Amino acid sequence: MNPTYRLPEEFSTDRFLIRRILPSDADAIFAGWATDLEVTKYLTWRPHTELSQTREAAERSHRDWEGGATFPAVICSRDAPSELIGRIDARLFGPRVSYGWLVRKDRWGQGVASEVVHWAVKHALSHPMIYRTEAACDVMNVASARVMEKAGMTQEALLRRYLFHPNVSDEPRDAFLYSKVR
Image (cartoon, rainbow, N blue to C red; front, side):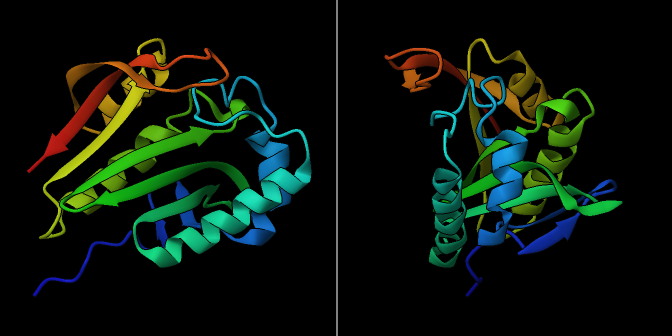
């Protein structure tokens, strides 16, 4: 019998170190992106206004890992592993893995998400129990669509009224679904 898929607690790409979120990451997450209106624009949660919100979220992310269904991780530069520059979430749904990510605004346009998501997709599809990787983005989120394409995913659907982005609208918005399968 094959073991259940899990994202490694720590892994590296050419330029980045990615590791499981720790409760002690809360201060850096709060300062780096949790309060940023532009970074959180297309996310499913509102920007944090108090550090306590970020501390609670970091603790929840750390606990969620134990359940084996979602793997929230921070992205750091290999040259400066104490500097958090983004995050990736891999969520397991049977034979598929769904991704979400964000990158701190001062690191936009540097290929951070593309490199990390590409590695994560390749890793998941190398597991014998995973047949599909996927991610969805708001139809206006051109940057995330480009990340998915660079990770080898193909747009397969327009999902009407699919994602709720409270920083953009009070109603669900249309989204593009991308996937890569084996």
